[in-house]
Every structure is written in C-alpha cells, then in structure tokens.
Image 1 (spheres, rainbow, N blue to C red):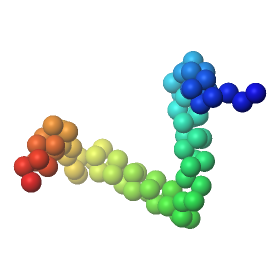
Image 2: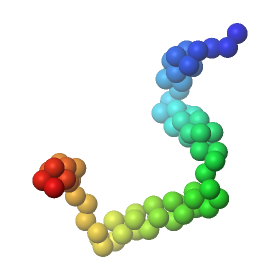
Image 3: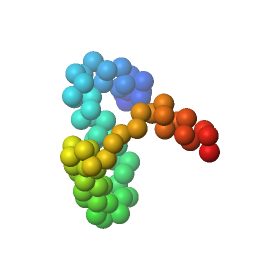
Image 4: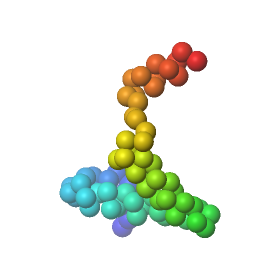
Length: 74
C-alpha cells in the first residue's frame, strides 16, 4: 500500500538535517527535469562569481530591512 505524502513527510522529518537536504535536492531535481542544457552549470558559475565578490569585499551586502524599505519607497 502506498504511503501518503503526509506520512512520507513525517518519516523524512525523522532524518538528520543533512539527509533531509539530500532528499529535498533529489526531489527538486525530479521537478527540474526539463531544464535547458547548461543552465545548472551557468548558475553554478554565477553563484561562484558572486561568492568571490563577497569574499573579496568587492561588493557589500544590504540588510533585508534596508532593501525592503528602499523597495517600498519606490
């Protein structure tokens, strides 16, 4: 007998955080099956570039509260 999504969720919540993250990634990958070729690599390169900018101090972060206030002023 197949288990419900709720039952699977409750079982997954008993996993340690790392195992839950792996399960989540695997499930999301099944939804992203129609992704264009090269998109994942392009995102990885972009994320690495942005992380390098943050690490080097080339860019500064803006606290969420400040960004939200700026957006609402527009």
